[in-house]
Amino acid sequence: MATIRPFSGLRYTDKAGELGQLVAPPYDVLSSKERDEYAAKNPHNIVHLTLPEQRGDDRSKFVKYARSAADLAEWRRSGALAADAKPAFYRYRQTFKIPGEPTDYTRVAFIALIRVEPYENGVVLPHEQTFPKHKEDRLRILEATRSHLECIFGLFEDPGGAVLSEIVSAPETSSVEVTTEDGVHHVLELIQDEKRVSKLAANLKDKKVWIADGHHRYETALTFRASLGEKPGPVAEDFMMMALSSMSDPGLVLLPTHRIVKTLPVAEHLLENLFQKYFNVRKIGNASLMRELEDLNSPDERAFAVALPSGGGFLLTLEKPEDALKWIDGPGSDQLKLLDVSILHELIFGKILDLHGLDFFSYTRDPDEALDAVKHGAAAAFLMNPPTVDEMRLIALGGEKMPQKSTFYYPKILSGLVLWSLNDFTP
Picture (cartoon, rainbow, N blue to C red):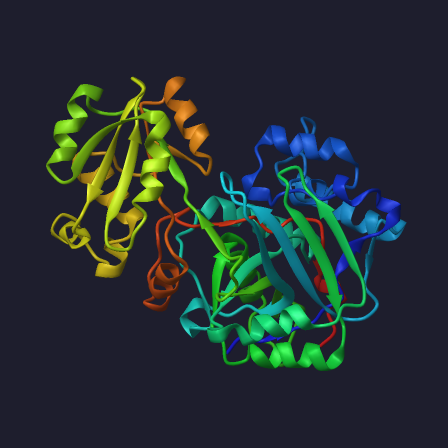
């Protein structure tokens, strides 16, 4: 099924500066202000490549992509970036805390090249819908640099955790580590032992891979490869970087993504009656909503919290989730329709509030940010419990996709630890 292989990654050298000043979160979670803050840390910070600056005197909007390619070439020429001499898999450990919990978690992955496969081949499976404009931007970066500057995240089934044990126990030849501002400790270790490399590659040959994070970049790589047409043998464009984790990893954590609604079509005092037609409704102060919602996180019930500008919100519960099937119309399996995110978008937003499309709300992963938004002009914030890994797996196996930003695997894969240039590919 999945074809993976080791590669000679591009990594920062001491000439570039301190690693903590060079890495950054992935491109799609940074605001413009945050991007500029990372760029100011070091002239070699990874955002200069992943999010090149648009300058006022640029002749066109595409000049910035050429700037990214020029910077990459110069960093290699100057020795700030260098390719590892021997191909490797890169074991990647992230040790972190979940906000509000004292326990330390460690998620383990190994970074490899994976052959990009059209979704219809059933080898690499998506679970979320994507935004076309984001894919165009990433395609321009890939075309200009001929490099995968960031690593996407994938999952594979591993009953009993045998492959996870192989990843954890593989001997490393060298390592680098950094603790980022969010408190996450990242360790990258090279696995170059040929027997271990071969065994890990063989272990994935009968596996499907689920894209956990990075759908836009994966689909960009598919488009990039398709533009070449048929080729007689393997070419660099057949592959991209992916961090692969076992679904049996106890450090695999999903967090919810909440929705902030700008305006509502009805007054706040009318909401309770509207919600009561479908849900059990309990009034709760905004500050207690998330705690109460988390206590109701169960596969046998659906629960949502609504924070409102008055300071008092609602806890909405659906004790028989299958009731939602009577109210959600249109195509899609029962499995898809019964997801929390589907009930929110189709029933609460669409049927109850007559809100449609994607422009009336914004996303946040931080419940405090959601609550703060309703204090400063937002009409409401809808707080969610996260989906499960198994829900994601089943939806993808069925050939369906969740709405955008249905899942948030925490923490994100850090950018800048390892890059891959297609020009370094050896068949």
